[in-house]
Length: 177
Image (cartoon, helix red, strand yellow):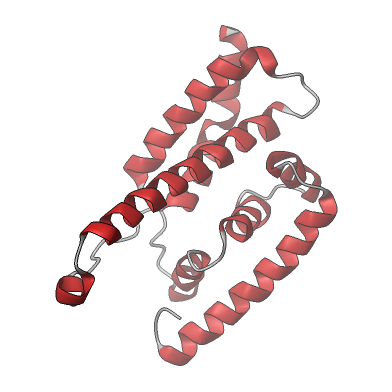
C-alpha cells in the first residue's frame, strides 16, 4: 500500500492540489482538503477495484471532498442566517477576501473567467475545471464524476454557454452579474 500511495502522491499531488484550489479559491483550505483526500484514499484503498485509472479514482474522491465542504459551509451559512438580523446589519457586512496569488493572474480576461466560474453550478464548475484547466478527456471526466460521457458533454455545453452569459453580464455591468 505504501508504494501505491507514494506513486499516487508523486504522480498526481500537484494536479490534485491545483484542482481543489480552483474549486475553493483558498490556498490553506485547498491544502486541508488535499489532506482529507489522502485520508479517504487510505481508508478506501482496499475497495479500489481498478476499473478506473488511479487518476480518475483520486479526482473522484477529491470532487466528493469539495462537495462535502460546500455542503458543510451551506449548512453553516443557513444557521448564521437564522440567527443574525440581516435587516439591521446586513449592509454593514462586506467580503474583502482576495483570490489566491496563484489565481490572480495578470490578464484581466483570465481573472474575469475565474470570477465567472464562481457563478456556475458545482457540476458545471467541475466539468470546466477538469476539461479545460486539468486538460482531461471526456472519458476521464466522466469516470471522475461518475457520469456518462453524454452527460459530461451536455454539462460542458451548458457550462460554456452559462459562462459566456455570465461574462457578458459582467462586461455590461462592470462587475459581478
